[in-house]
View (tube, rainbow, N blue to C red):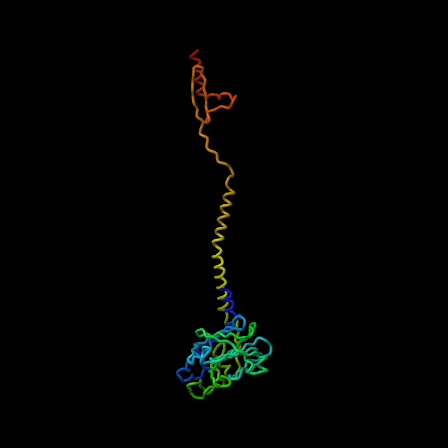
Length: 323
């Protein structure tokens, strides 16, 4: 259990919910199917510690009205990971956005309902979009699990953009419409076709869509819940180990106690109690007395025991009277 909690706690980045309106002024599509704003609302991204690189993307809603292979129909989701010096600031064609100064993506992932591709920057620079490697995407509720063929990097910076998927566009991105449309978000002030992006708050998202530069989201401010969960998991694991060991410890303690009691008892044989001596008085003419113990016998050659004081006095009186 503890191992699974460590895996879940690798990197967790939270995006504010309810902000899938671009810079804040976009109008959602008017079509019944495409009007679901929550389908474009990024809420959380997790980079797991598993190999190969595996991510989980949670959206406000992941519906699949067109029954596409990857379990989602409406959004296009792109994820960029920066973990080495160099890389590209410009994103894949479609969104028109770029990474901030000092950043450059080393891996790029693009997921739609029909396809999923993973790019390393080195291959992309040589082959362009044809360098994409297939990845596997699976929907679990409102979370999309993405398994790539790439090696997992250590503590990367992560950037995410979300738009409307257009299977007929070479870039797979649908542009904004200047007027309300059943298939596109509309707005006259926003330049970039991004509906949501990973940002700490709405103000940062608005600034990014005005400048075309994605913000940096720091991991340390968002993943404290998972480390708390790790600590709880470790505590429960230790309690479980202790409970499993408790019967053995009690049995061992009981055996030691019995051994201690046995060694402390006196090592001696118990002999049967000797009944008190029985005194048998007999008198004859000669004034002889016999005193017998519990065994009633004398050792050979042993002198007769002296009679008790009262008996001796009676014997003396008898001798005097007879004289």
